[in-house]
Length: 293
Image (tube, rainbow, N blue to C red; front, top):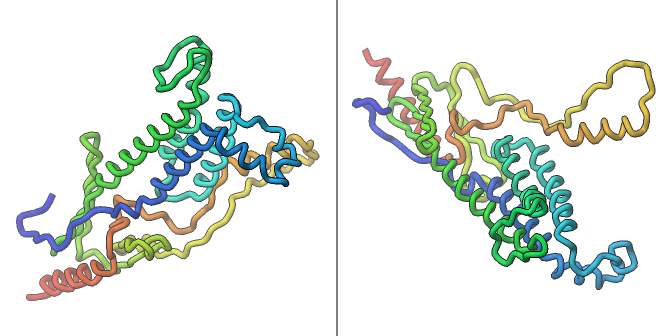
């Protein structure tokens, strides 16, 4: 990847904290699994409240059945996933969302397999029905798998700054490898982008802007709306409710500014403000060397 006449100025990869949203989403789903798997510990507690005890929730049993906990996890999990999907973040693409859906739907899959007469080896499983222990074991298993896959994905990016070029290397195990290089002579501006979490944990994105000017647009947020077709017919209430639900479930927050791409910017690196002058100094030196007759 590096030529013989290049000297490495800096090398690194995204920081662990830059992938905090993925770790957070995995932890939230695990806590949902653990919570719905232990309804016998928190339902009696909330029923002791005078407000809850006099409402319909006061008629809940002290422990939900497997089916009740399963539907509770599906409902609360889909609400959580919908919030992440609406956020439209760089670390919550379709692959991550499908993984989250698999997490919350695993008890339902286990239930239907068990109903079909197939016994799945679950620690603490009961022969007469599905075991609530599955919520604990599935939640922890998916959480660990998510942490490991996120860590592997983070380590798959490698950035190398030399005295002549910036190299972006993305190698996901032995499945694929992508290398992108920017010549320092083509860089017109270097921008450091800090998020709120980045300021707290000391990481940020460093963008190398060329003549294309990518990344300098202002950012705004809005909720997409589908225009109704001009049929002239008044829609019924169920149709209107279904249309609103469709909008709420399928639309995401829109962005005028492109999200940072880990394959084309120094994404989530530690102390980007320290690297900023280093790159500018390397640009000045390579420019001066080119202009020397």
